[in-house]
Image (cartoon, rainbow, N blue to C red; front, side, top):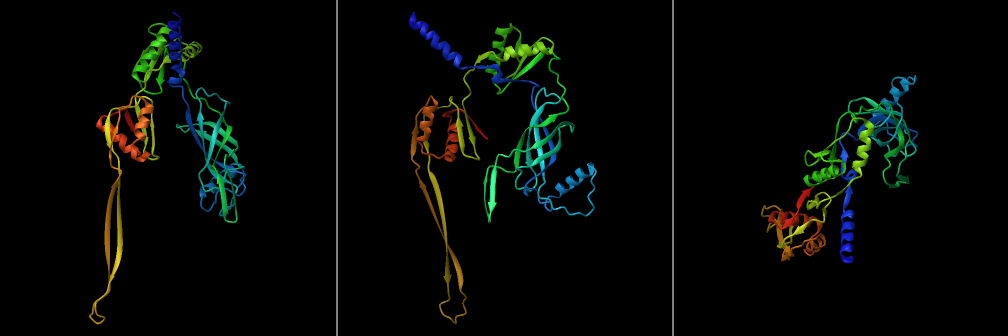
Length: 365
């Protein structure tokens, strides 16, 4: 009796340890961020600003700003500015953002400024995709890099042409929201999965009553909710904290062809197969031979004749047996036994998939 009870407790602990909250697996449709962008000027730089002869838009922007402040720059004035830089300012408008709320902004140089350290961003309107101004940004820039130069030598740590202003923008216009106006809310899964969508639906129906949730497809679960913002907020708060036992994932291998990275999840398995992995090297040598005429008065000319030699070698091409592997550790040991580099391993994995001995989906990014 004690052993059976202990087994049930261990099984319950294992099940709970694999459960995840619905809030970690889904997001609420329509509740998202929106991108904002703006163009502005950074002043107060220590001689590290744009070279205005190469970035005329910096001077033009400064003239426009000064004219709005009542200062007229004489026509034909060649301003050699070193403490001003033209920048692009980006920010994310949060969901349910309200007027007067402060948001963070990222400032990036768009000219040839050497550094934005110590600069101050002047008032910059931030616009949305509809070309409407939703926030105003201004403040001192925090640059995470550092650098120094003297005598023709320089040293730099991290990036100096970009920085961040915490709470550097103030929301001036609110986005319209449809939250609370309907009787249904859609939960979008982070990854499309029919099994997980049905499990989330069953979990919500057990907690809220049958018919409360319906799986529309592999990514969307529709929930019936009462009208009104307060009621929907309370219901979502309860639903998002429900825990779901996540099913086994799809076996997948991700290959990054640019960096040579190979990443696989724990569900990858192998069938028995044989792999031949070798290096084929081709060497081409070219020598120039000088041919002269036999007699100095024979009327011939000295010519240069190229002589080419090609050598082909193939090493390490033995056929190796790869045993069937049911878990990730065994798969790693089997692939490491081939002695292939990450770049060679990409070709081996693709060949294994084509041969049908790799139980996984291969995705190249």
